[in-house]
Amino acid sequence: MIGAMSLKKRLAKLAASRSLRRGLISVALFFVLWELSARLKIPVVGAIPAPTEVLACLGRELVSAYYWRSWGVSLARILAGFAIAQVLGVPLGLLLGFSRKAREIIFPIIEIMRPVPPLAWVPVSVIFWPSAEMSMIFVTFLGAFFTVVLNIVEGVAAIDVRFLRAAASLGSSRRDVFWRIMLPASLPSVLVGMTVGMGVTWCVVVAAEMIATNTGLGFMTWRGYVAGEFPMIVVGMLSIGLAGYLSSGLIRRIGLHFTPWLKGQ
Amino acid sequence: MAGDAKGGRLEARGLGQTYRLESGATREVLRDFNLTLEPGTLTALIGPSGCGKSVLINLLAGYETPTAGEIFLDGRKVVGPGPDRLVVFQETALFPWLTAFENVAYGPKIRGELKGPELTRAVMELLRLVGLDEFRDKYPAQLSGGMQRRAELARALINRPKATLLDEPFRGLDALTRSLMRDYYLNLFENRRGTQFFVTAELDEGLLLADRLVIATNLPAQVKKILKIDLPRPRSDEIRAAPEYLALKSEALELLHEEAMKSFKTGALTAADFVGAYAALN
Image 1 (cartoon, chains in turn brown, blue):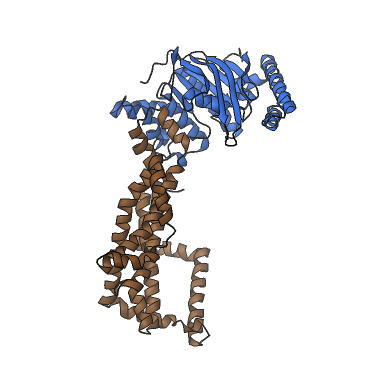
Image 2 (spheres, chains in turn cyan, brown):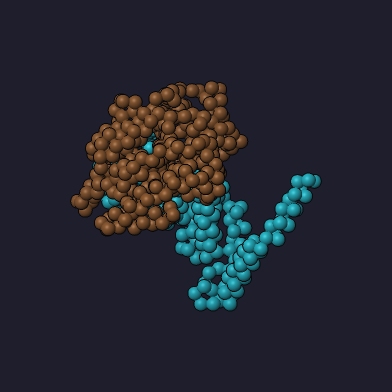
């Protein structure tokens, strides 16, 4: 009973908030205009299926095994590519950040590779890797890898010299400086790299799935186009957007757990 | 503890620091700088920003190597940073990822000097002394500017450094907090009595705190004159109206004015700085 009361109160408070009301009105208006433009067959925008059609399609898909399998397959690719990017990218980023020698030797190679968009790697990786699955994980990995490495290198470079000086004065060994100062000081930029990298990963996997395979959310969307099922395309788009949003949010949430000092800033 | 608070004679002998700029030109910041900080005394150095004060701190702390001269602590030449000469930085250099307690505990903990309940007791004693015992679990970003500076003082003093080097530690605080910080700082100084070197751009701060006030010249900085501040302690704000205080102040202002005019004539890079600071002192 008490729980219900507080929920009611919270809802009332939410409804009273002006910004929420404005947001809701704007979203509602958006859907109304969208529906109208589809019904009235307004040129260009009218070609997009109406929200009611999309909703009907979504209802069908939510109970279809194919839809959820597509989610699972894409998520597995993301997870694999992203995890490998962290395992290799975080230590490499830290090494490049801390060792000038390593930076001078390795950084030029990275600078050559980095401007090549991950998707430009698709043909070569399809040839290179024995299975489509591996090539897809590889391009996903590339998408996150450079973002992670560069963010960490910048984060380490931006460490306030006074922290290092204070640490040295207080009697820190090189080991202490690494583990107790440089690592925590660069953690926020590691997390920024991860969050941005996660976003890039979704861009890459969706495009790669459209090109190189016949599974996953990207392919599902593409199939909607090929089969002329236009509401399906929009369902695919929304699903991909939601997936990217959820995974970035999850990373941020986990990150905040490891950087409690950034809370409330 | 790192060192007993006894001793702590920190000497700069013929210190010089010249930087080679990227343009190939050189910039001499310190030339033949001689200064002895006596054990258990509080020496303040006054000068406008850009007159090499921070460079002097960096040399004494061992963060930079001088291009000429040497530094001695109790007759022993010092090279590199160490817990016997601790710096309290401009603004704050508390580690943002550690709580107030963890920041203060950092030095004795990593040197393995204290642990467990002994460490906790020592840290809490210091935090109480600076009025932060109730904020032990707050991160620096959750503390006000004045509280951060107090935590910073505690982090240095728990190591019982032979010399504490303070680089404009209260810069950027409002006037009221600044005067409170002075009280806290003097209280700590009375309590621990290590050698103190306090760099400031505010003449009143120097006069209210110091046993001796060092006035530096323009770049390249040298010691222009050392004024002995023989005012009774504890010094309250009312002392500012005392004739002895005013006499010292006008003497210091005259010396600073001389330097300001000199740099103005030679068109030195810091001339505008110096004149500006001089105007602020008045």
